[in-house]
Length: 457
Ligand SMILES: C[S@@+](CC[C@H](N)C(=O)[O-])C[C@H]1O[C@@H](n2cnc3c(N)ncnc32)[C@H](O)[C@@H]1O
Image 1 (cartoon, rainbow, N blue to C red):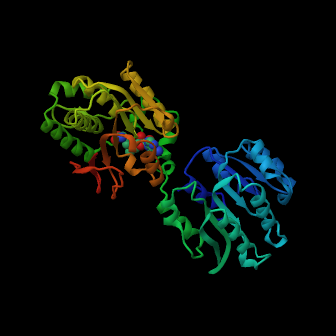
Image 2 (tube, rainbow, N blue to C red; image 1 turned 60 degrees about the vertical axis):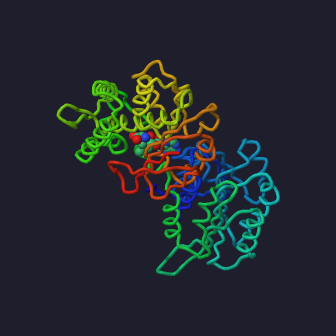
Image 3 (cartoon, rainbow, N blue to C red; image 1 turned 135 degrees about the vertical axis):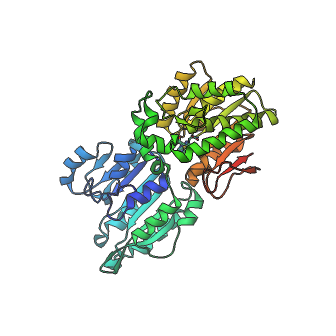
């Protein structure tokens, strides 16, 4: 669970919904730079950049120290030329977060919103908004109703009205949280939207359920990968839990994968040992006795088995001279095995594209290039793959990855890539299959997760 710095988890709301690094915010009414601040987490952990607006000049020194990524304006929030500031700092028209948290009783909250509506909202949109109405204190200047009308006219959806805090069981509704449907997946908005006034903990629970974030799911793994040692990475527990999987359960799985390989009868034992030796020579893996004659890492056997399933499918469908695409590639072991199998089966691959988070992608580049120096691999990240020219004929493999990503990420892959891929195999590890393609399902054997399926399209 991510640590919040906000008063009532506004930073969790924004980070979960936007689920990105390098975002942009406009924070009006900043106050303290760290504690009770809604953008410190975003700036500090996800490298966001923003504009901090605060009237009390005594905070300036603290901003200089703690908020180096952001621009700060120490002026009256109702009198700032926001459009000029956003334009001059080259902020994107699609911003990620707007906070207005001023003082309802002196009308600065409402006046600032009216100013933004008149000068900024024609051009700039915000994926998420938290707007403080302080309605529990009384209805000052009709702030809540007028603000709701302004946001609604601009297309924003009020997902959590009257977010409240509790004190001795008394409810204090004080803030509205909005999302802009042009910038955030509408399925997510539908699942979140409520008409009730929720306590912020209830809202965050719903958000957590709906928006499982990759950065959370893979956080420890990514942190470990930042300064990974190519000669020693496979023994580390964080890495092992995410990818390598040693221990008796996985040794049993490996036995089953081995018998699947034998059943497929596509490679002989010598070829298999060569593949094992190749993939087990780098990263100092923990090898285990799988059978009397085979000592290896369980996952290497899995890569050979799934590698062969892909070869079989490619041969059946007569696919040759194409772009091989893998999404969520771990350390690159599957790629190494598949490159060798393509040679054995005389399959010509124009290029092998690996797509992953930046940190994992860096490891894959080192790993694959060390084991197979002259390869035709292209290492892309989840951020830059959209700009790549994948060529005409494309085939996909994704194993325990695409299906477990957050809904929005998976949908992005569908829209930007998978809809244009002819065929492939996805090893699916969640209950519902929402692949927007005609597909057939096979049981995963051995079943490594409750809902797992092999999906062919
Ligand atoms: C559980 S691992 C599976 C790795 C590998 N396919 C295997 O079977 O061993 C999930 C992989 O998905 C990657 N991943 C996480 N988020 C991603 C994203 N948004 N785009 C691409 N890959 C991502 C992780 O870094 C990791 O490599």
